Length: 303
Ligand SMILES: [Zn+2]
Image (tube, rainbow, N blue to C red; front, side, top):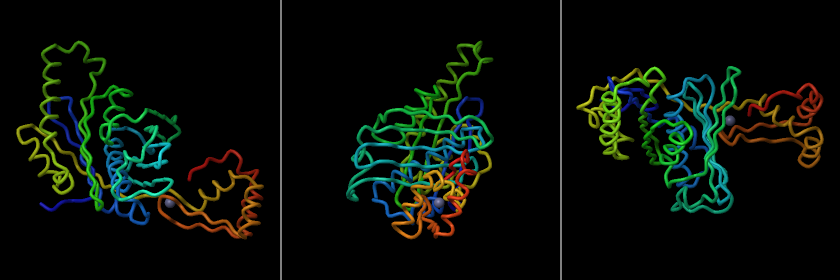
């Protein structure tokens, strides 16, 4: 069977609390990153973080977006990935100074923090969790976060080779209230299933993760288990920037700042960090930004 790219697949192990997701990003990865001039190590790290964002989004019941950030005070300043609930993904990086192609993400981080933000679009409250970076790969950081902050046993495998990115996630669903009275035997059965499936999954290689289609991969890893595979969702590159959102962002700078940029440069130019779209505001456009300054108070920055 041919590999189907740019898909997110959910699956579960029958009669156990273990569920999983698999993701492959190829066009999504290339459209998101190929217009950005990224050092190899950061491109790989962003690929892994993009795969992770889709895997985590698939575990959430939310209409909105999930933002994963790695912030640091070293050469690397910021990695950021945003994934919407229908798997539209964008990503970018900020750094200071030279980065050679041999340097990986963890050579560039000092005092790193991992930030996860859930931004519901239906008026719900924004949630943000911040943890220090522990571990020396992205999957370990995420596993620690899920266990410490969410109390959910999670295992994550990520791979990225410069052309595509892929990942797998396994989660043991926590006992719900009505399962408290669960027999000891059945709790033991759940832990056994979690450990057994985790050991099987640990045999996966980066090459398999990146190159095998979902069914072949699941069969190779779990052929003795009773796996139910759900219909796939498609992933895509999506940047939410618009001329209106950029105008709103400029308004937040205030009339004084807008006037001073105009005086210096005769126009205002903004490039979207994520998709590299170029927005230009000439003097007439900029005057409109300033005229509507008061009306814009209280408008939300959506860039
Ligand atoms: Zn954009």
